[in-house]
Structure formats: C-alpha cells, structure tokens
Length: 425
Ligand SMILES: [Zn+2]
Ligand SMILES: [Zn+2]
Ligand SMILES: [Zn+2]
Ligand SMILES: [Zn+2]
Ligand SMILES: [Zn+2]
Ligand SMILES: [Zn+2]
Ligand SMILES: [Zn+2]
Ligand SMILES: [Zn+2]
Image (tube, rainbow, N blue to C red; front, side, top):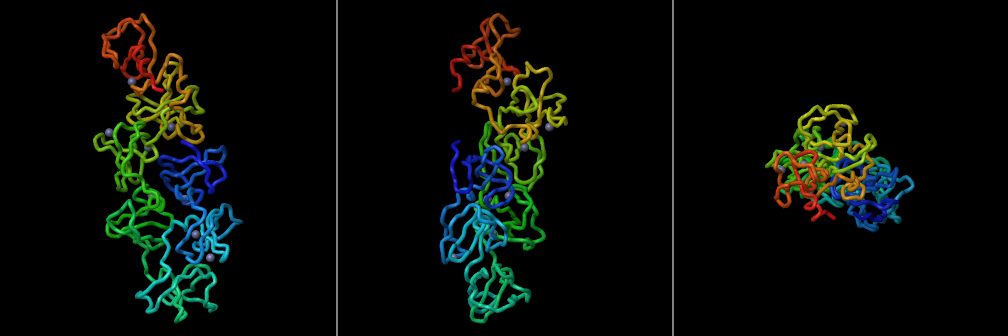
C-alpha cells in the first residue's frame, strides 16, 4: 500500500484496509477505526479516521453559513466555538474568529432556524454567542430559567429577546445511517440517552463517551466512530478463515476463534463453521518476527492437542484456538508457541508483516512456504523411502525414491519437482 501525503499530518500516512483500535489524532475520539490511516514513522504511531485525515482545505459548514472555513493544522491552542474543547487541528473563519475542531465538523449540528416549535411562537435563530446582536447582560433560558452560557450554542428569538438552550427546544437531531437504514437515529449527548439504552456501542463494544446515535424503535445504539465509518457487513480474509465472514449485529459476549480471548460487541462470524472472530483479529499477520524468539513465528488456526504455554506471558494457550508457533519447529529445541494477542503486542512485535518478503523465503534453505498449503514444507532428499505409499498432492502419483517436500504439521506431501513447477511469485 502506497503512503500518501495529507495536510492533516506532517508524515506520509499509510491507508488502512481494515480495522484498527485507538484514538484518532484528528478528532480525538477513541474506538475502532475502519479504513482510516496510520503513520508508522518511528515514535509517531498516529491513527486517523478516514474522514478526519481526508479533511478538505475549504468547507462550508452548517454551523457557520456566512463564510467558508479554512483547514488549519496546529492552531496556537484554540477552543472550538461549538463544543468549547481545546484542539490543534480543525477549521476556522478568519473574518469572525470562528473555530471548529474536527470532532464538531462531523457531529450533526442543530438547524440554524426553528419554525413553529412548541417552545415558542416565533422563529428561533441558532447563535454561537459570537457577534450576537442582543446585548443583555445575563441570558437565561426561557424554558428552564438557568443561564445560557456565553460562547455556547443556543437559540434566540429576535422579536422577544428571549433565549433557549438547544436542549430546551426539544429538537432531535436525526439522520438515517447505513448501519441502521430502517429508522432514523437520534444523536444524543450527555445524559439524554434513555435509561434502557445500552452503555456500549452495539457494533464495536466501546463504551459511549458522552455521545451516541440511538434508534428508540429498536433500542439500537452505536458510537460516533461506527456511525461515521460503519464496519462492512461482510469481509473475506483467508489468513484467518477460508469462508466469508458476516457482521453479526448484536451486543454479544463471545470467544474469538482466532485469539482465544473474550470479546464484546458485534463479532464477525461464519455460520457454516460457527466461527467467531474479533474485527481486529481478521487480519492477524501470518509470519512475523518477535523480540522473544530466534526464529520467525507463524499463525496457525489451531495448535492441536497439547499442553501449550505462551512464550511471552507464560500462561496456558488453548490448542483449539488460533495462535502463533515457531516457523522452523524442527530446529527449535522445544515447541515455541505464543498467544495471538501476545504475539502482536507493540512491545513484542516490530509491526512488520513478513509474508511475501525475501526474509520469509529464507526461513531455512530446506524449508519452503508453498502457495498450495498453509504450513511450511520441509525438503526430504533422495533415498529416504516413505514407510507408507504416499501420493503427491499435485500430480497424484506415488512418491518413490525422488526428493519431496513434506509438511511439518500434517501429512501434506509434494514431489520436489511438482513444488517447483508452480512456485508463487
Ligand atoms: Zn477522527
Ligand atoms: Zn468542537
Ligand atoms: Zn465567519
Ligand atoms: Zn462503535
Ligand atoms: Zn480475537
Ligand atoms: Zn467457515
Ligand atoms: Zn501469552
Ligand atoms: Zn500441513
């Protein structure tokens, strides 16, 4: 994947094809990021949502309709005119000194005017408290009588010189989202969420941080990240499973088949195999180098029966789930295995996937990774006659006294000449 230069960051960014988990450096929201960008410059390790990274240089935003807003990276510590939070990357209007952080760019914003509301008989106009025409010293909300804070969004009636908190007008910000096309989702903040609503995002299991999108017909609640970049309904990755995986949109407790640890939120599953997987385990790397072992380790879908102990955390490894094992087991004194989650830890793995690289091919000069089989194959030289009659998986002829490749983990076998006919490039 080619790196791209984007104005949001000072290093080129790597597009992500799938899920990662962390905090977006643009809008500062935390959770799963689907199809975003990562900076893998040493010591930077920054993540961005796709829409935050691809921020346009100029936008027109409904919260400030009078002038276009310009994108600026690294403001001298500024406060967002809408949410009053400090930020360093976002948009501004130089005419009005109006500033918008990236979080508020994507957040649904209240309509600029309200007509025919139950709250008040005249038109109400949205104000940010910036350049307000009315100059009363204290501004109290007509509905709840408490103060309308300066520099916060509120509605005002110019005819009656009255003020209203946005919340007090009872408007609901609704939109139809692709992850729940049946009904509009209400955008709720703070304590607006009804008591019965889930406290965690149905799709990713992340706890809501002050805001959520909620359908009160279905009791469906999702986070900002999943609303903006919904996880795909189905994905395919032969690294971890041979069939297509489908997003199961329910908040469930499950054990991930690929890593053996628990998960919350919507798993991906293969109905046929009753296979369930964390979204961030779908693309576990196949061959990696870790700083705890001399040989490369490779991902296996099942270690099989045995008393396995993780080489990193020293805890038990369940042989019926996916894990990593030494890729040249025959050279290794004891069988070296690692939990999937332990193997990919930032302090253990250098974050470089070796599959398809020159290093991988040099695993050992008598060991190859043939495209036709998921495990490493070892070359057995002429003259070692097999005890049983074995057929080559490629040409289906019996293997006699010629050289052949044999799998170290199962009984897959290939003539040397058959393996060389179609070497993966
Ligand atoms: Zn973001
Ligand atoms: Zn803001
Ligand atoms: Zn302006
Ligand atoms: Zn979510
Ligand atoms: Zn997992
Ligand atoms: Zn399957
Ligand atoms: Zn472990
Ligand atoms: Zn095998």
